[in-house]
Length: 155
Image (cartoon, rainbow, N blue to C red; front, side, top):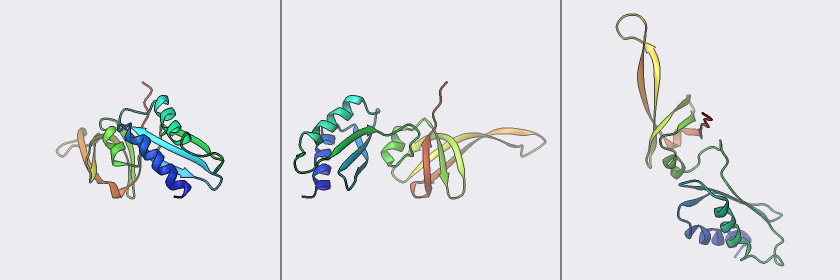
């Protein structure tokens, strides 16, 4: 079993004990620096990171590989990568980039094929002068999303 396979197995074993936590990224450099990035349906606590770190660290032999280990939660403003991340952020505002446009809107649905965004827009009235507020709704398949980031609001 390679070092990466060993780390992956230990990581998966640790995540089985915490079904609300899921892996975003695992990278291992040539110098055996292990970086684990996690997210969770209800966020990731420091204790979650410590627990996953211990599962990996306590089951690897430092005599065999001198490794460094970093376990962290996904950062605020990091692009969403998994359908599960979209689903946990329903109700929040996203900035979504596709090949055609960039939209800032509320995520109202996330299923296995696409997301649904909703926002208000001011448009010219169909009859008469002036503008009116209309509610817009757009379905975007995941394969058309180049990047999606949850906006951070400090109100």
